[in-house]
Amino acid sequence: MRLLAVLLLVLLPYHPRFLPAQPAPQTWRLVLGAETSLVAETTARGYAAFPVSALISLGAQLGYGGGEVTARFGAREIRFRLDSPEVLADGRALTMANAVYAADGVVYVPAEFLSAILPQAAPGAVLVDAGARTVRVDAAALATLPAAPAPVAPSVALPQPGPQQRRLVVIDAGHGGVDPGAVGPNGTREKDINLQVARRVVEILRQDPTLDVRLTRNRDTLIALRDRARFANSWRGEGQPALFMSIHCNAHPLRSETGYETFFLSDARTADARRVQQMEDAAEQFEEQSGGPRGPLDFIMSDLRQNQYLRESSDLAALVQDRLRQVHSGPNRGVKQAGFAVLVGAFMPAVLVELGFISNRTEEQMLRDPNQQDTFARQLATSVQDFFRATAGRTAQTGN
Ligand SMILES: [Zn+2]
Image: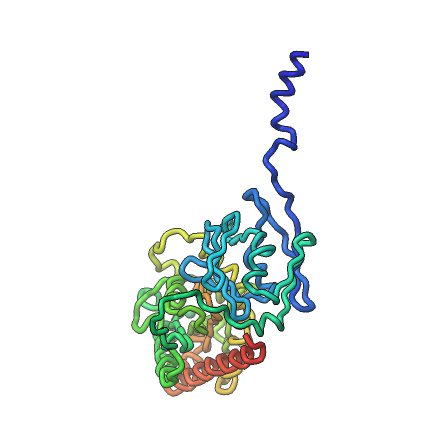
C-alpha cells in the first residue's frame, strides 16, 4: 500500500493531465476568392505557429528589410520582427501572447495572428472562423480598403515623394578583377565585354529620370557574388519597384555552340543550365570569405523570393530574350532556370543574361564589336522599360 502511494507520487506528474498543455498541430484553411490553400501549424515552440510565406496564399505581398518581414494586404501594412510578440499594423503596435521566430530559415508567426490580429488589421476584408481554422480574404474588399489613418504624430511637414519613388535598376557586370570569366579563342575576356555592355545599358537608362540606375561594379574589380545582391537590396527603398540584371557571355567546350539565353533563379533544372551555373558560380573560388555566416534572414529571403519573384523574374527573362531576338543572329536558346549564386538573395525580380558564346570565334568577334555592344545594350535597356510598363499595367488592373 505504501509502495503504491510512493509510485503514485512519483508517476503522477507524468500523467498527460499534469504535463504542460502542448496543442496538437492542426491545419488552417486559407481562402482567397475561389482558391483554398492548406497550411499546417507547427507547435515546435509549445504554441501554434505557421510559416509567414503562407500569407501569400491570402493575397499578401511579402517583403524583407531592416530585419523585419513586411506583409502588405492591399494598402494595409503589417510588420513582424523576429523574437518579438509585437506586430506593427499600419504603425499601430498589437501584441500577441507569443513571439514570431525563425527556425531552419523559415519565419514562423503565431497562429494567433490569423485569429486575432489580421481581422483587426483589415476589417471587413478578412473573415475568420477560429473554430474551423478557416481564414477567408475578400480580395475585392481588400483592394478597396483605404490606407489606415496614420498614427497621431506631431504636425511636421510630410516627406515629399522623392527619389525613392523612382524604379531601381541594378545592372551587374559579371566577373571582374582576378576573375576574367570565360576567355575567347582570340583572348577576349568575358569580364571586359560584360563591363562595356553594362556601362552602356546604364548610360542609356540614366536618360530616363523615372529610373534610379546602379552598377554593381564600374571598373575592373572583383565583387563577391553574394555581395552584388546585397548591394542591390541595400539600394532599394521601402516598397520601391526594382529589378536586377546580371550581364554575361557564355562559353562551351564545343566551339560551335552559339546563341543567347536568359536565366532566372530557381533550382537548376537541366544539365545544360547546371553547366552554365557551375561556370558562373566558379567566381566564388576567387572570393575571400567575407560577410560571416549566413543568418536565418538570408535563408528567409530566398524562401520569400521563391514565392514572390519567380513569376516576375521569368517575365523579365522572357522580355530580355524577346528584345535580343530582334537583333541577334541567334539561335534563341530560350529562357532557362538555374540557381545562380549572384541571383540568390537579390530581393527583387532578377535575371542573368548570356549575350553570346565567347568560345565561338564568330560570336567572340560580334561581342567585341562596339556597334554590336551598343545594339545589345539598347535592347537590354528596352526590355527593362518593357518590364516596368508591364508591371505598372498589372498593378493598375489589380488595384493594389
Ligand atoms: Zn559569366
